[in-house]
Amino acid sequence: MALGDLRGAATAFVGLTSLWSLGALGAAWAHRAQPSAAWGWLALGAALRVGMLFSPASLSDDVYRYLWEGEVIAAGLNPFFYAPSDPALTPLRDAVWAQVNHKDVSTIYPPGALWLFRGVVALTASPVGWKILSGACDLGVAAILWRLCAARGIAAWAPVAYALHPLPIIETAGSGHLEGPAVLGMMLSFTFAQRPGLAALFGWAGASVKLLPGLVILALARTPSRGLALGVLVGLLAIVALGLPFVDAGSALGRGFGRYYEAWAFNGLAFSFLEALTGDGQRARWLGVALGGLYCGDVLRQGPSPDRLMLHVAGALLVLSPVVHPWYVLWALAPAMLRGVWPWLVFASLCPLSYLALAEYDVRGWQEVWWIPWIEHPALWLSLLVWWARSTPPSPG
Image (cartoon, rainbow, N blue to C red; front, side):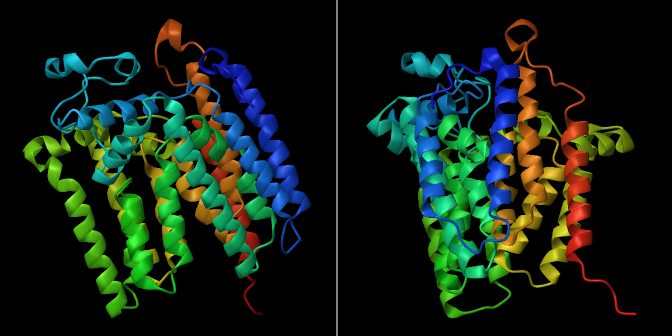
């Protein structure tokens, strides 16, 4: 099911994903009362992911950044120290380099991600290689949902929806985003929550690719054990070992992430309110961090399971962040399906609207379509309110 170059057909792509989302939601609705679904639906999800491997990664050029940084490491150089535009890297410049975004920004990725980049580049410099890895990991997420939802008594609509929904398929097998392996690490930590040492190792594995899964350990730590302590220690030592080859970058280690944190803003509605309130983007960011920290701290105080904690953490991040790329939604969508929280399907179905910014990208450059967040975010908030009202038992009397 190769879709071709989507950047030049962003409007048609948004229409296609809208219809695709409706189809996935229809299949989920048909399974709303069924305790389990045929594995054929997962096989269809696998086929859809395979089809996307042959579409060019035209919605995002992040995959070229991944491949480039793998090439830099293969050359014995440090991507924390050398941004792609650095003249020292001129001999490495190739067709991959030409597609890299934000060439003046050094890497923002944790060491596990960097070594994954290096491993894929050792096999192939084609985006398809990375997309195979990301799509396969996302199919693993879908399979885990199939198993855990059945074990927990969550109706079959949830795993069917995830297996067929366009967002995870397009953002992993289509665009090759890091969420594929990182979310898989998080989901594996949920799978082994009754074996906290192993769960901690998978949480660290996910965090070595993208930081968020490391927070799983906070939920596991509510029940201390020797196995958990061992898992935390081994995982931490592994991350340190992965990172040691890059520490010679010194103060440059945080340079790329600092640029991202200070300057990026896209598709975040609540953040625009915080910015208007504070009158300054940096103060708004810190206020968002504080509000998110207070909210997640209160959730943690209640002693949540790892999947409940991560759903609230990811949800707070998506609501308050200045940057809400469509692929970020996978962090909430996977645990939401595991807990039967359907409003995140609404948000996942609307987030591809943000790709309309690409409709005139070649003419006007990157310009966000102002009205899209006003559709996406209020729809999520209203859906969550409806879900909460229907899920909360009435008070006696």
